[in-house]
Length: 334
Image 1 (cartoon, rainbow, N blue to C red):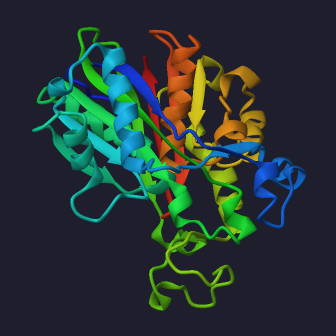
Image 2: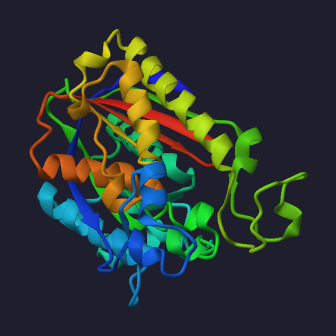
């Protein structure tokens, strides 16, 4: 699904926030327990370190931290929230939804709450949903948080996956604006369930695809066919960016920034070069955070705004690609 905007009101990103555990694990530290090295990881992925939750830190606590900071930056109270959307593939439990628990944790009851399960595309899905809801005029302030505790679903003996991911959370407040020029100009949300076998987390033997070649032998952990995921990401990232630009009669040079899911530095650099984007127009922080799934895009957004690299009126394209397979884009005029 993809649409051009028919917004009835202006929409802005009023504030952002970050939630991280204290524990940082470098490649060298990981190499002490896994057959790998800093050189092997960094050359293939660009990753140098990742945050790993410990000492009681949870996905929920990181999400609440990020949301509180985003509300503070937006100058809002928790009671001002109409809804909270939590994008995650590592929820605390299946019921109640983590979003409802976060609403309670931050004192925002009775705001609406819903989890979004679209893996690494989840936050961009959430941005699209939030902007569409605010555009109706029925909602004024919606928190969108991407939060993951990937360390909970990793086989720490499988170097194909455990070196790639990290924990963290990022949040954004999507609010109504008096400036009708602000908001989401174009959005798309797509999926291809036939590709789900390339990246999946099986509960039992019945969920392992026929002729599977990647299962590590440990259930309830992430399984990945790296070759297939890489091919999907390289082609889909470029195609999704081009489609978003074409829909709005824009060129890549018109963008102030592309904020893409941090899957692999080589994938990001390949797309940047093919699109003719300068290095300062595609943000990369995978070296410090690794792949944080649904949290990666909001973490990037928060860092960019915090550093003053984005301003009102800028055209910014958000892109997510993830397991499912899913992909999404959200083109904004800030």
